[in-house]
Image (tube, rainbow, N blue to C red):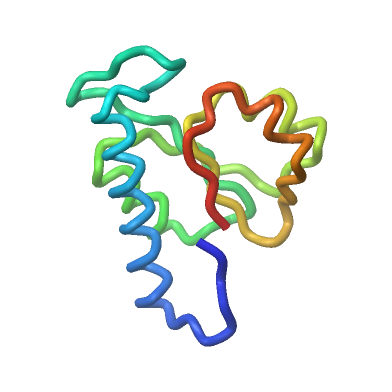
Length: 112
């Protein structure tokens, strides 16, 4: 969910809904939390970093996922936090370098 200069708020919300729906599909297909086979009631843990819009978190919650909101994360924070989440949504303050993904043992989706 990268933001382009021409994206309107309604376009951003549409993109957030699309990401939430894709995450729901991933969980429903059996690639759920900690690699265990999930059920229809499984919820993914989504880390919303950088003060993403509250509406973005609501969209994920409306689809049954658990969200945690956080400020900008340093590389040290990412090392400890990423293993706990199935998805991360970031804006410009948090960078997701390739190195961060080796700690993301449960991560299924990342968006910015």
